[in-house]
Amino acid sequence: MEYVKLVLIGFVLGITAVIPGFSAATMAVVFNVYDRLINIIVPNIKKIFAAWGFWLPLIIGGAAGIIFFSKVFSRLMENYNVPAYWFFIGVIAGSIPLVYSRVIKPPSLLPSIPSVISFILALAIMIFMAIVKPEEGTAVYTELTPFVFALLTLAGALAAIAMIVPGISGAFMLLIIGLYRTVLQAVSDMNIPLLLPVVLGAGIGLLLGAAFVRFLLLKFPGQTYGAVLGLVTGSILVLYPGSFTFQARWGDGFGNVIVSVICLLTGFALSFLFGRRKKIN
Image 1 (cartoon, rainbow, N blue to C red):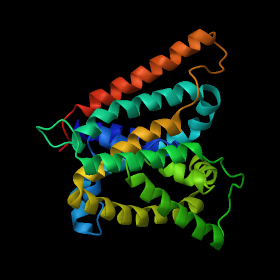
Image 2 (cartoon, rainbow, N blue to C red; image 1 turned 90 degrees about the vertical axis):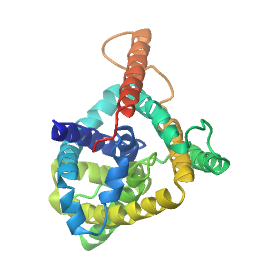
Image 3 (cartoon, helix red, strand yellow; image 1 turned 45 degrees about the horizontal axis):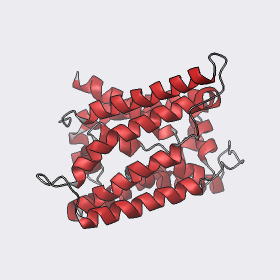
Image 4 (cartoon, rainbow, N blue to C red; image 1 turned 180 degrees about the vertical axis):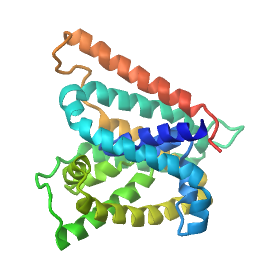
């Protein structure tokens, strides 16, 4: 049963990894697997294999989520993007109490001043990203050349480093550098030659990013989670679709608003309830 839960969590993480502006690391925090993930991403083969019962189900579920959702994401965003984004916002909002609980030191209910400063700085970064949110580049690479190999390796590394930090989206990083559609199309078409450099770069980025995050959590846990709280909170601004209404073949404008509100509340409830669960051992 434990393996099934991890596969399902991995599936959700895989789905969120596809969506620009939506952080897979945030969802790992929500499902209480983030700390353990960070601790096993090390250049130590023996330690990694010893934890196979934890990471293998997550990888299986994550791969399935990425492959599945990359095929449906374009259609979902085209027809029902507004309620989808409100669901994602609900999920993120529901995770805020969990992240806040890691900022404070019981019995105190208030964060330290350094944690508040970290929160404000991280929130400011997300506000800036929301303001300057870029449009996707038009170039889509479909054939592997030495230049494309180097480009995709670098993109995979940058996306993985971004993905390690809760509140920052790896897919959003790909969007910024104009390679999101290339990677999404490669996953959808199972274009293995194009995916290999992305995976290579992602492996390098995960090792570097995880080591950096472990250092911060060890030396500055309160400030680090204060920054994470700012990034998570600010990601709501990045995802904000602008309204509750959307175009659909069914329902009037008010009915569409109801659908978006239901999606928002459903996402919040699911995230909040999962955040109250104990850590997976």
